[in-house]
Amino acid sequence: MAKKDTYLALLRRGIDETTAQILSDGGIKIGDLKKLDAETLVNNYGLKKEVAKSVIDAVISGPRHSSRQRFLADVLSDDHKKVDKIEEQRFKREQKDIYAELQEKKEQLRLVRVESFRNKKLVMNRLGKTIELIVKLENNLDDESKDEQRSKIRDQLETRGLEAARDHEMLDLVGTPQDIVDFRRKIAPSLCLHACPHCGEEIDPRGSNVMDNSSDFSFICWDCEEEFHASMAHVVGRRLDNGSRIKIDPNIKPRMPVVKPPQKDKSRSIADLMKRDLESAGATTEELEAALQASTLTGILMSIDEWIDQTIAAKGYIQAQEDREEFIIATGAGATKFNKWMKKAGLRFNKQTGRWTRWEDR
Image (cartoon, rainbow, N blue to C red; front, side):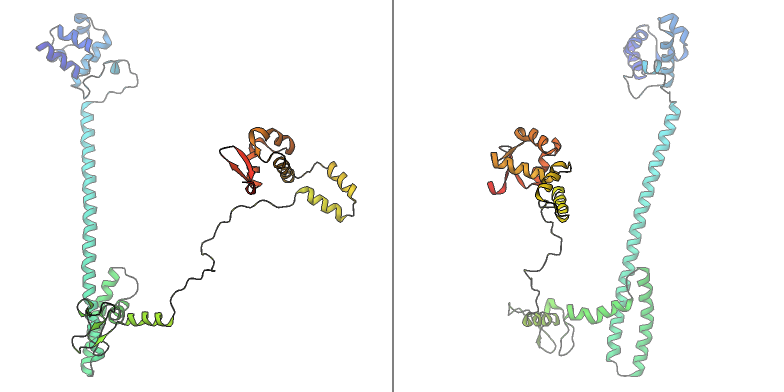
């Protein structure tokens, strides 16, 4: 049992199986190996000098993470740098401390974001209450007839306005606090609260709509018992009655640009330009033909069109396997541009037969 324990302990320290077997059969223990030197191992157990040194180093350094690590990795490798176990433990400890510090910083940032959101929420709620109070004060100011009371209300409005301006600046909102007050006081009642046009009482639409007539959405004021429609409903009704609804003109151009398909190039060839110049100079027909035949600047596009017309007139189709060589010789175009010229001429390619034909010949 002691031999097996020694054998496994040597393997855990990265010593190869043969050397571990020799040492365990010799009856030596791990504690005894720490007291021996390399020369004793060479003389008593027949190990090589490099192997004996590696065994001593492995026993002193302690068990390895990889139990099957070969001793040759330590002995024969020139670039292998031995890491001290103390340095390794220090590095792991520093790595753990850095990771813990990062986690702490992450948690601090999360708490800062939560606290910022909580503070903004508190300021928003306070601003909302201040706006509601300013709206109520302005309504009372309009209804108040006594100058003394109006003066007191103005003082309160000035104080609440300063508070609203402070909260508004803390939240970095757009506009001014008075814009919010005007929206809440003038626009919101006409859109949401549906103030009664007869008595001026603000009505909640959730409990004031008339459910008897399902085809009309009307309200009823529970104070004066008058039925009415919302101001928005009157605006929509006027638009519907006057015919000012949005109409779609079928002839209007689309807003987005429409890409047109490519068309066949109908530009004049070089031969046509030469012929026009010669005609303008007063040359005869024989001179024109002689000049065109003598000139080497023949129109490539025109020659390709002529070759396509002649080939289709003779065969009814064009096929790359049959006509590519003749196409190169007759037109002087490259072999790799055969399909490009067929597409440019407006021909249609059949994938089943591999032939180019015209659209009207389908």
